[in-house]
Image 1 (cartoon, rainbow, N blue to C red):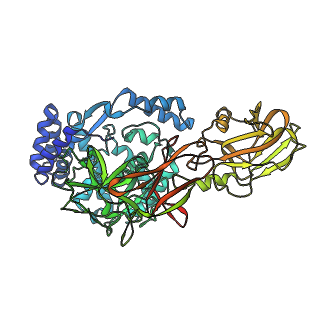
Image 2 (image 1 turned 120 degrees about the vertical axis):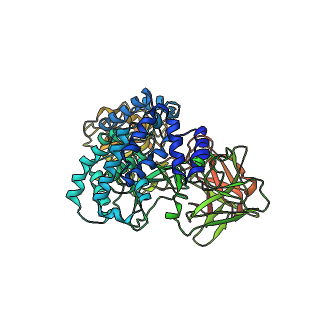
Image 3 (image 1 turned 180 degrees about the vertical axis):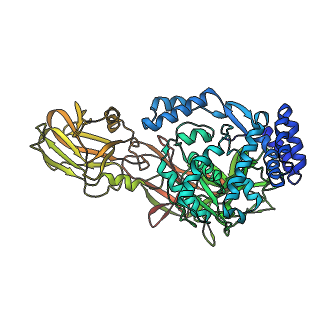
Length: 637
């Protein structure tokens, strides 16, 4: 989803980019495009005629105004209100989420800044930005260009056009003054980030919306990673702390986008952080894999390669004029040099990651004969070299693992084949932590409702290795009631819970379920998730040490129990249809056959040595990642 259209790309390239060093021509073009609203922009320029630095800042803002915009519409307003309400309610109903899931805000009405912006907004923004900047001693260690890009802008992205700077300054300047009086910009940002964390933030990833806006976020701390970055940007910039937002479009590890705040240090180094996750430190140890890093900018950026913006064959992502490749600040000494076996009849080549369904380009470069180079690429990840054909990515060589000082290609040896055992289609990640919630769980049977005659049927004493677990009672006698108890220090977190009679093939449906404390209405409702046959949905208790009691209606002998703790459902799912592929370089993915899972493992014969593999579930799910085999184990990166 991008906040501009093709006409704006042509506009950027033909007018702005060609006049990168001709500010006066760009401003004249802006005034012409503004039509009747040009008088407001002229007021700003006239206002600063005798203030050279502020005039230069005004010219920077005005020169870049034409491509900035806001999306408006009653649907956007309604969804923002739902986000606001979710802070108190904790969640939005599944029905509402499903109804709005397909909403695309890019089809909403567009209001261009150039048509509506008023002089007083720009003048107040410029004056307050200078006032806050000049108050801070660290400002002397930055360039004027840094100030213009990382402190001055009146907007972040496509949020509503608002006067926000004074409100944020008056709210947070006293806070900074009370917490820190020194000269270290990183320390100033750290104390403010810690303060923002204390103010709280509700994570809410539902709905596809433009930037929520300064005034909305000031009072409603809700959204996803981009929104908490917006909050940090408004606060820091209002205080004269230079900051921006960096992101990756597609992580090689998480199959998703991610945004974080990027503090511009006086040392020239970027200090990445997300204030709700961890404290700001110089040179943080980052766990998330990025591949390539891009930066959102207010000013239009020069083309990375000549002709890039105007080439419609290039994916829209790489033609974004307000985006800068910032990978050199993260991976300064990691370049990838590749060569195709055959000449490629294409100008552009791409470095891709595999999303589980397709190759997603994360970098672009130019072919020089058979050779191509991608600078500043994160090592320790698997990449696919490709070119674009008929709108799709086609590999021109084998995928490879980029190491610190070398490239390791995955070249399948079809003369050496193996039998392999597969247990997952996606890396484990946080899954062991979820499975560990089952440790200490006790299952008891009784015939008295008060469980005074309770007998221990089984207990989980170690972290399960997989999600599907069969538990056999140690007592073979009839019980009417079953009690599922979490340890005192843990909540119940269960994906599925089934109880079978010794002579039954279908699970027993309890007549009633209750707990050792009053359940809220929402927890009464989500008890149904225990038996909804969705292994990734889960019941999570509100309190630690909860006990759930199941009334079976009549006493009966029980065996077995099926326990599926909270998990990601990326283990082998019984009854699902799977297909294994290996990557054949220019041939792409090659199938090694389909199987229906009859247990919790899949067995494949004839797998080429040294191949990169991909296990696809045709039945359910979307999280899949390529892997390779080493010493009989699946290795995901």
